[in-house]
Amino acid sequence: MAPYPEWTLEESLAGTGLQRFVGNALDASRPNLFLADFHDLVALLAPLGAISSLSQLVLKLTVPGVPDIYQGGELWDFSLVDPDNRRPVDWDARRGLLEAIGEDCVANTAAHWQDGRAKLFVTRKLLALRRSHPELLTDGDYQPLEVAGRSSEHLCAFMRSRGEARLVIAVPRLVHRLYRDGAADWGATSLALPAGSWRDVLTGGRLDGGVEVPVSRLLADFPVAVLSDKSAARATAETGSGVDVAAEGCTARPL
Image (cartoon, rainbow, N blue to C red; front, side, top):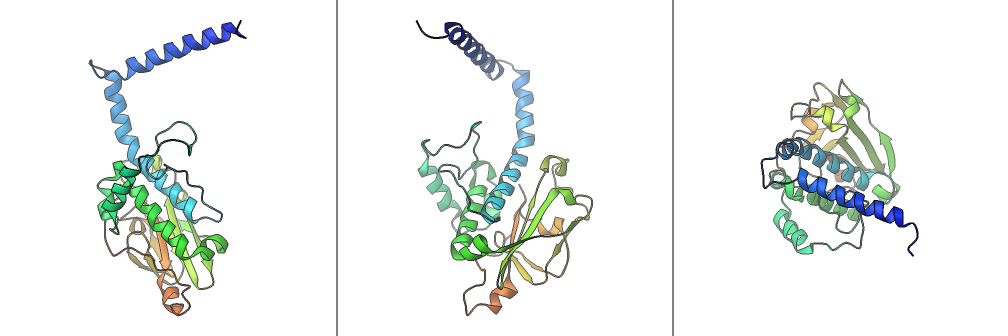
C-alpha cells in the first residue's frame, strides 16, 4: 500500500482541476474576454519586463563579483522556476541572432526586441568588455554616483575604476512607475557625470563629463548605458589599459 494515499489522491485531483482551469482561461477557440484583457496586459508589461531584464543584465556584468550566466539564458526567459543548465537549448536560434546583430549597433536590435536580440547584443558587448579588461571589472573600485531630480530613485548609477581606466554604468529601476505613459518620465533628473570624455560602449554616443547630464539625454537611445572614459583611454593607449570596445555611432528608439 502506498504511503499517504489520501495525499496522493488530493494532489492528483488538485492538479487535474488546475489544468482544467488554465485550459479554459487560455482557450482561444471561443470568444474569451479574459484572454483579450490578458493580451492587453502582456502588451503593456512586456516592454517594461525587457527593460528590467536589461538593467539586471548590465548590473550582473559590471558590479563587483563574478557574473553567473546560465546556459540557455542568453535570451528572454519566461520560465517560472530557477534556471537549469540541463534544459535543451536552441543553439541554432542563438547563432542566427548573433549573425543578425553582428557588430551592428542598437538601432538594429530595438525594432526586434521581442526575439531577445537586445539582451544578446548587450551580453556580447559586455562580455567583450570583461574579456579585454578583466582587472577593471574584477578588482576595480566601486563608487556610487549622485543622481538628482524627482525621478532620481529610478536610476542606479555607479563608476568602476582601476588606474586610469574608468566605466560609468547607469540603469533604470522601478520601471513600471517610471514609464507610466509609455515613455520614461525623467523630467529634469540628472546624473553627476565625472570629468572626462565619455563614450557609450553600447550605442557609441559621446558625452563630456564634469557636468550634470540629463538622464533623458543619457538614455535617449537605449534604456541602459555603459560609458567608457575616452580621455583615460587616450592617455593610456601605450600601456593598453584604456577601455575601448564601443560600438560605432548610432541611434535607436528605446524599447
